[in-house]
Each structure stands twice: as C-alpha cells, then as structure tokens.
Length: 237
Ligand SMILES: Cc1cc2nc3c(=O)[nH]c(=O)nc-3n(C[C@H](O)[C@H](O)[C@H](O)COP(=O)(O)OP(=O)(O)OC[C@H]3O[C@@H](n4cnc5c(N)ncnc54)[C@H](O)[C@@H]3O)c2cc1C
Image 1 (cartoon, rainbow, N blue to C red):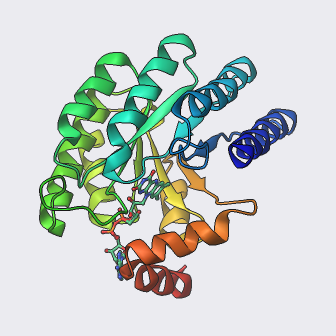
Image 2 (image 1 turned 180 degrees about the horizontal axis):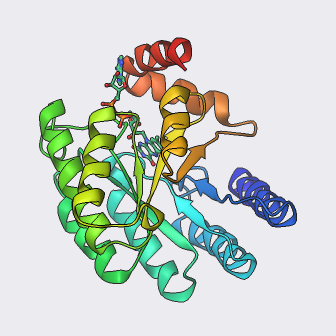
C-alpha cells in the first residue's frame, strides 16, 4: 500500500496547487492505483481522505472506471463517499449493457457522471461489441444525463456523439452551461477549439506524474487499436 499512499499524496498536492492557483480543475483517479486489489478498506480510506479534502477546497474527485470486474465496487465506493462528501463523481461506460441502470441510479442520487464509450476489452455478455450498439447506448445515456443528471460530462472525440449532444441540448432548451464536453489532452485539438469557440464548456484530461507511461502502455495492450487512434489524432490535432 506504499504506492497507493504515494498516489493519494500526489493527488492531495495537485488539489492544493489547483486551489492555490485558482485553476478550474480537479483530479481523476483509478482505484487500482489506490490499491483496491490489495486492500479495499485501505483503498477506501485513501480515496476518502482525498474526497474530504476536495470537498473542503471546493474541488472535485472523479473516479475513473476501469474494466468490468471493478464496475460494481467502483460505483458502490462513489455512492458511499458521495453520501458523506459531495465532491466525488463517477464514470459510466456506454459499451456496458448495465449502463442504463447505472445512469438512472446516478441521476437519482445526484451524482456527477462522466459518460464515455469505454476503453477495455470486454466479453459480449457484459458489453456491446459493435460500434452501432455502443453509439446507440451512448446517445441514450447522454439524453438521460442531460435531462436528469447533475453537471454531466460527455467525454468523446466522436463528432457524431458531439453533434447528437449539441442537437439534443438545443431542441430541449438545455443550457450549454449545464453540461460539459471532455477530451483527452492533444487529441482532436481542432475539435476542442471549435467547441470552445461555439460557447461550449470543455475539460481536458491530462495524464501526469510517473505513472503516465505504464498507463499508456496498458491502454495499448488492452486495445491495440488505441495506437491507431492516437497516431491518427497526433497528426490531425
Ligand atoms: C476525458 C476522457 C476520460 C475518459 N475516461 C475513461 C474512463 O474512466 N474509463 C474508460 O474505460 N474510458 C475512458 N475514456 C476513454 C473512452 O472510453 C474511449 O475509449 C475513447 O475516448 C475513444 O472513444 P471516443 O468516444 O472518442 O469515440 P471513438 O468512436 O472511439 O472515436 C472517435 C473518432 O476517433 C477516431 N478513432 C477512434 N478510434 C479509432 C481507431 N481505433 N483507429 C482510428 N481512428 C479512431 C475516429 O475518427 C472516430 O470517428 C475517457 C475518454 C475521455 C475523452
């Protein structure tokens, strides 16, 4: 648990610095980095310290979603912490078949959600395998979140998903201030600039610290197509 405590301390420093510099930012964490595979109670207590601090600073902790073996435990931890400290939110992956139920639950509890497609290799029992199925579920979840969610974040570089979000917000008179788009640092910078110029809110996810390289290699190992995605976008950005 030494590494987990180190991850917590890095995030605590990041939160303090964000507050000092008055940056409109927050931190995203992964429960595996916080030692969930070694000791769930210790992981919880590290995350709780972070969320409590974020709450005091008026900031926020996003708990990233990892592979489906962690979904239930991750959402449960977010629900439990949210009941004590508001400053925590979840991620829902549109490729998971269970997501509609999870989005409903998060909306009902007023928990902030980041919606993404999902980045892990999952079996057909738990996840839609085709792009059309994932996109359909993404749009369905986006509509639920824009209608009944709390400050939802729509995290995608897919122009079709972005257009669907803008169009749904327009036709339902949902203010662009009530949701945000999120994208990864350096991916589709052209699209990022365009959204901001059009008056939409955009948050950029920036991997930092010593763990970014293993993080990047894991993403590639899980889904080699991510390399093509990254390469294509580095040149386009
Ligand atoms: C801010 C943020 C946070 C995230 N957090 C999480 C998280 O907590 N958990 C998680 O599981 N995932 C997370 N993700 C990753 C996400 O689940 C997707 O894997 C990733 O964003 C790619 O999907 P997309 O929505 O951008 O759309 P895609 O449909 O995958 O891609 C959009 C466009 O990018 C190009 N493209 C995409 N893939 C390829 C490819 N393989 N080859 C060539 N071109 C390609 C195409 O032009 C395509 O039209 C996050 C993503 C973002 C932006």
